[in-house]
Image (cartoon, rainbow, N blue to C red; front, top):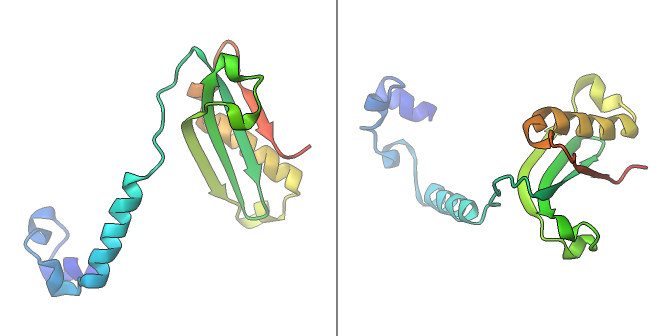
Length: 139
């Protein structure tokens, strides 16, 4: 984009709009990359709307470098089924990386951090009278 801004003489939409991308090095490779990006977006995960009649499930995990979480909802009559037979509808995905002193935390602290951050970011989803089910791979 810097090449476009330089050629346009500014960063305003009106200035940039007049620049042809082919004049700033946009070629077949970039077009193919854009097409792959569009294709990936078409197959992106579709999030559901929260349904108060469904049970919430929170899945968290952490590694040495990163943490992640998924919040899903399932019909209440699926809670006793094996995980592979439950009809999960995704509501939210979260992730992050550990940096600085956090990289030196014990794995149990990193697992706990994933839980706390998920609850902090998704408090509006998780505050329900019947609560939510929490799943983690740490004992």
